[in-house]
Image 1 (cartoon, rainbow over the protein chains, first blue to last red):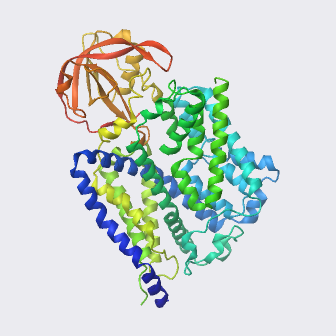
Image 2: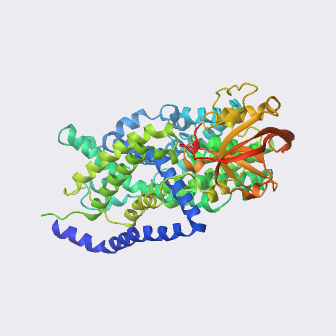
Length: 351
Length: 250
């Protein structure tokens, strides 16, 4: 064991120096930037937004990794398989309405979905679950209701469009990935020392509840350790996503979007780009969408409300950590096209 | 003796530092610069979980399982911690607020979307209307909805000076930032002010403005018609202390 660790240390010495360099370099660099008045405002604004997005998402990402670890360690595939509806459309609809039982937002949903897929939930249902839960859930719909001054129409439209897109995309991707599961192997499973080896990475893994030994405290520590490792894998994508989104908001003025506000096609695309880039929490995005009413076509605002929770910069990075890149690309383009279609439809009927 | 795994050690340190950092922010109340107080409860739970994860990771440090490989991700995790240390929490800078634009300000119902339905306070006719952090949202709603009721009344309001190229040379916005959830979604809201000596004012400066409430026609793109926009005809501007909470939390 001693030798093995020593080897892995030597392999890692380059990253070690890189980390050390960054740790020393960033404070020096930001010190310099803060001294220059022209830059300090941007750096300060970036830092505030970056950290606030992280802090906002942190409880939910932790919840997601915790639930995913519980699923991974204790949920039995056979029980899960018995509980799932067999009929295709019924299964998809159940997955889409699961948010009423389990209202979580888009940060928590990615690790949970990954955990479920690993336990053998079909890709179609998993995708529908992933897309629908952050929209079709009581918390998000209530905040939409408040944001739009009690306009039921907006709430109903948002929920039904979210439901439709989620079921449609779930059905489509479910057909494409019937047999092969597009999961990525987590980095830490590759190390030999990991307690349950590479079996975890496979969808047909087994329930670990069978071979958990020791008292209840040992079980809890194992659960926490698994959560910690999973958080290590997921957290990096959260940080990348939050950083990109904050950088975008620091550098690009929103005003430059305004010019296309009433154009039927361009306004929808602009609002979708905004929803993607801002990576707002789905509990808060309705309040931002409200400020665009009147300046942007109604279809584009609907597109913003439906796309934001399903697909954004932060979420895409989280997804690409959990699933194969090509799968994420397919998922993103299908969702984007479906939402674009709905937005154009809404514009055509002047909703 | 078994050697300590550097990857796991750094990860344990990260978990510890972030738990300590968030606890400090919670204790000092500085977290208000990042997040709406409504969300603090979930962050408290997250901090406890972070501490537990830290202990779990620490326990794994010397055992044979649970080793993390050292990678670029470790550096990434320390980035927000370092940034938080280098840039102490404060209100968003003017450069960034400027990026968000004036959208929320110069429109009818700038704030009525927020969902707070507290009625506006009533001021006696001979008393000036005083707008502060507590009644900001309800008063903004009232001023926009019943502009005529308040016409000609003396008004006093605290805010910071916000300038925009779209505004006329004598105009500025006496602004506050509204935080719906986190600093990244903060929006500017406020009242337009007309002041002859505007050029003497420093953008971002906190001031108390005293003046009379007037109205002007304004083309509202939201309803595609000209509506009355309330504004302050400024008589006096006094420098003011920053409020304890620079943001307004609906």
